[in-house]
Length: 200
Image 1 (cartoon, rainbow, N blue to C red):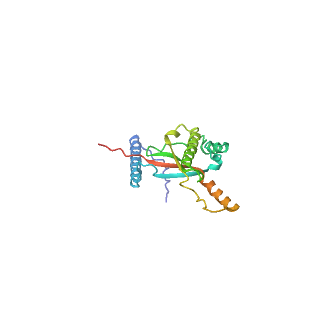
Image 2: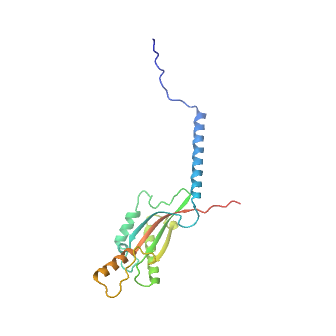
Image 3: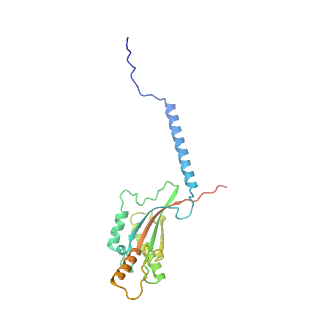
């Protein structure tokens, strides 16, 4: 029997109108995908309220950032902020979210329970403000995307032991260790849903 060689395979060639049609269909599929993603977020309760979704949270020890009772950053504190935010790629402090959400950094200032409550609120705020000013060195967009909060000692990481009488060396150590953990700056990265625009 005589065998015939198979014709050589060639890539399928498309005419111009076919390529345009394929591109159009691809774009339409992408459009409906974006609409579907937006509808899924809306179903999950996105709103214009602060604090829809915490992406990440970083606790920075106050004893390293500040001297006792002070709100000026130490040299070690400035070094920590430089390591966190001095990013050549510009991605760490990039607030571009594609217009669907707004990104905020919430700076929480916490103190220990030593001293008066009013003084601790002021100290917590002053320390969070110092953190904000240091972050601002690394991005001009920071002022429009930062919220500052002071907690004083109302949200401790660790409850301070309530010893009474004369404290032993171990008890003093336990109190100091708990107070040290409570003195901190917390940087909370939040995505906030934008308000819906009502159409009349």
